Image 1 (tube, rainbow, N blue to C red):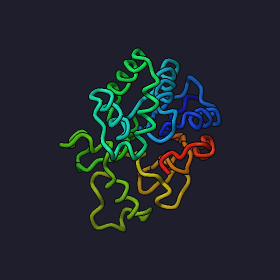
Image 2 (image 1 turned 45 degrees about the vertical axis):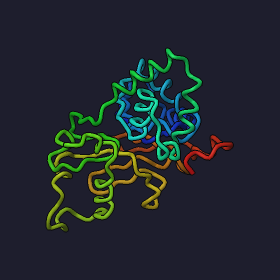
Image 3 (image 1 turned 135 degrees about the vertical axis):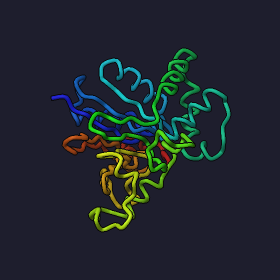
Image 4 (image 1 turned 120 degrees about the horizontal axis):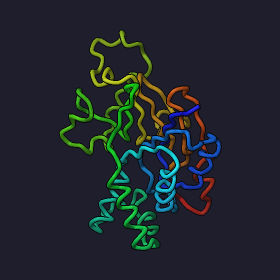
Length: 242
């Protein structure tokens, strides 16, 4: 049976991605929706992108743009760096890209250029990296990068937890736009969980791969979850973003 699988933040942890893909028994029949942040953290950032480019040749894949992906793409286009990016995983990515050929880098540039900020499926489920602030949906955002930088959506539903809708006098309009929303961007460890977390109709699939957590896959229909080992255990000689 064809599945729709959403994959959380990877942050250069290719070993973890390959491990969780195997554990989820992913086949070419499965549709894969990657929620962004493929790079910055572990040393295989460039290899993750090469892996995904090849994966898209056999699977139906959607590649959502993450904030770290946008930062790396900007560097590839302009060679401009900033200390904040380098200190939050960018340095290891920069080092990895210096080992690529010009042809490989060209293919990666195309990959980054073709990413999407969000996607809505036929079941009115929204997939994006971070969130959105416009009450009419991400397509109305004046500042488009909110889709991969916003944290207010997750902060809002975290504060609401899973109280019933009628417990709120003014239920947020943006939550009523979609049946479900799948995001990454903010590690679930910040709310005390090592697995994907659901508040209201929002599912957060970033389980802290950049730090001490795992790469996670969730079946968006059944809510079955598969996880890699903690990524740091697969890269024992590296610090990631810890």
